[in-house]
Length: 397
Image (cartoon, rainbow, N blue to C red; front, side, top):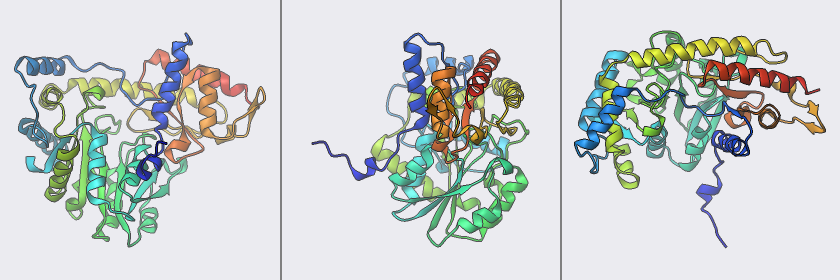
């Protein structure tokens, strides 16, 4: 008899990947499915970045890379942080990993002990609670609904903190909601963190370059808590490099050293070719980032307009990322063809099977009254998908 570890049996499968798999299965049957379930830019990696990767192959960068990343990439990241964010780090404070997902998990495994509490604003990215469980920590959820633009308040944060609280995970721009914390909002949250000297912040900023408010704001900018903030970022979203698997942290030296030691034991350094491509991403022409952001903003405007035309949906105006998170609880409990929609996950499955549009139920994100729709696809697909969703929802009664 196969017996899995308690560590693994405590985990939940990723709903985002599960929905993507189900949509692929329908596509394999010849059904025209529009997949709006996966958080992946539909753009290809910019040409100058691909050329840098090809050159790295020709230059024989085919050996093990340093565990924490190549020096030139770490320096490029430091330069980016200084230039774009006004944050000063040394290369020794940077650890490059196999994607921002590994970066976050490294930090959690390095500083969270059994029984430590980790405050996770909800709606949240599906993997945060599972990573905390891996570290034998306890997720503590703080819910912010559409009425507050899915952003927690300082008062909510204060109420969630106990003597066991070790970490706050803050994602801005947010997956799954697209919400972006303003500088004033971050300053108010930082003031709460400042009062609790044993509390650390993991600032997930992977969607930094996809925001529609101008200058990105990081909670690491506040000197009073700077030595307790770990910035997480990478090239996946802003440079359309999801498959290259490069993420990184900028952290206090002792945390960076711990993450490097941990990484050295279970993956070692990330792909040498991907790192050289990432150097080109950070040091090369940035117009590709602006062009993609402009396209995403146009798509955001389109999908907000179309979703607002569907009765029973509440829609906010997300200020970043490429997700929208409509509140759809008015459809829960409705029926069609003998089938009752009991949850947002049921609704997402109904939209897949009846409307042939793949999205993800909000249950997986700690928001059971919502669904997540990714608009990282063409304007044509957006128009077609929302029309299908509208038709499918109209059949429910």
